[in-house]
Length: 269
Ligand code: HPA
Image 1 (cartoon, rainbow, N blue to C red):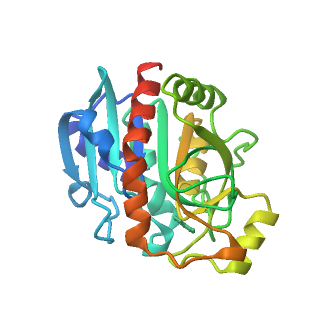
Image 2 (image 1 turned 30 degrees about the vertical axis):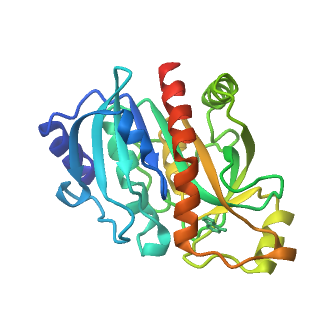
Image 3 (image 1 turned 135 degrees about the vertical axis):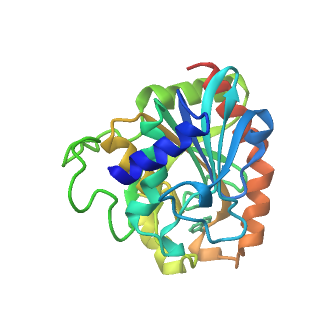
């Protein structure tokens, strides 16, 4: 707890207070930042006890500002298990954002489409998830100050936030699909056999993030919602090699749709 509080105090000393909404921007997603009235941009490396992002294309900054007059804290770049971070490190910023006051958490990611109705560039509302990561951010001694030992996971994604996003997608005429997200460790993409397996166990999309943050949010009873951008189609019978550059490019194409959706949802909170 002392480590979380030290990071919070540092950010308070930079004028960051009364945050209302936390936002995590996934791989290749940054257009939302063009709609933020930025008050502070703080490199992760300056924040006490923050892990430091190692992958070049993940710019590690915490951004504080306003969107339609609401105070937002934005993580530009998140931490992944494949980079070698522990689950506890991955969720550290989420816990600090909660201590800074956020009442809602919006998450985004790039994901592979297991459900073949999903096409590259589609936005998919995360309805539920399957945790295939090794480890859990809640393992070890429970932080009773943050939440209970055995948090309920019957509705990890907030029902009201999900319906808000669906309503706003309709108004914006954005085709927002819905699916189950499976989180894997990475960094390699999956084999054909693994894509078959993911489909059988009920996954609609697959990626390497988000689930730890959601577990930490649920633990703190912080309502959260997540959207995946489909960057590749994972058809085991017709699998084409993909590379990360392509994934980032496709995410970039869906970026403005996602940012419009998040902004309209934030307006509606
Ligand atoms: N698998 C895992 N993570 C991903 C994928 C994928 O196919 N696409 C984007 N992130």
